[in-house]
Length: 347
Ligand code: HPA
Ligand code: ZN
Image 1 (tube, rainbow, N blue to C red):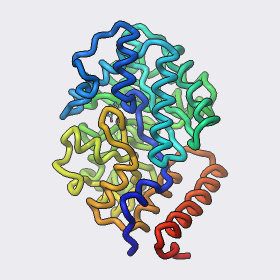
Image 2: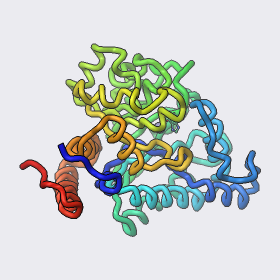
Image 3: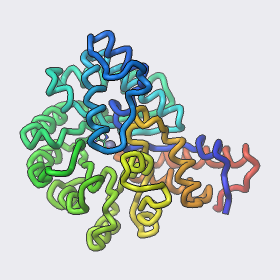
Image 4: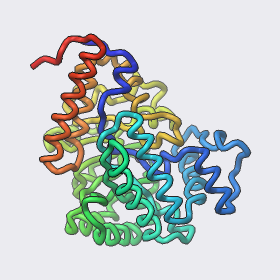
């Protein structure tokens, strides 16, 4: 077993599949945009904005962040900064969420959001060592009509830039079966499908996502192991979970990372990989997450390299891209081991 230093883990090449551009926004950027757009923040110091201990409190502040975003340029800025910060955390490939439901309610059309976000994806691909695709998350509490509208909007965009549809916000009090039609429309348009499920809601929502809504992936899936038959199905079908342990800790789903089901999910054969969820608002990066999880579960370097490679498998990148990413990651693993004077990977 090889134990890696914190710095080594931080520098591992990574994939991220569960990060929200709004939740990734830097407090200073939100303060500046709020000022420019005449939006009053509820705090004097922008650093005080990002304080919450439940999903509902978090979503309230998410609403404040979104109210500060109005023009295509605003969305370009937060998306581009999200990719800059991700590249800094060692992320080489990402599929990143944007959630237009909040700003649509404030009168900003989804086309304005997408104009800024899609331009940021193109710019980041050109400027930064990270390759990004976007996933449009609809807002579950806004209901099935909004979901269908979002599926139709997503269907009309360039699939290489907008690869899939997801869903987020609260689970409690939401009947997840009503989204089946919207997901069917997304599937017919060739969009990949995922859903936040089993975060602060039950494993039943994960079952609805994969059985009724045709989801290819599950975001969080924190409660999956509560349902052994469903767990067998997720393992057999190799449906990935995009797990976010620190995000779950911050909203108090677990008292500490050691109690998080991530390690048990992996032992059970689930394709569970690591993500930051909302790195700006939670003041935590995926590089931090790799260190935290490795220490909490006593993972070796080999195990953390495997977690990183599982991110490639869990992604929706075409097979040739996945193969190229794998080759690149393995070469980087070898270079890092050699730089830190550690033994080479087993052949
Ligand atoms: N869960 C629900 N809604 C969200 C999340 C999340 O992880 N991140 C941003 N909006
Ligand atoms: Zn999320």
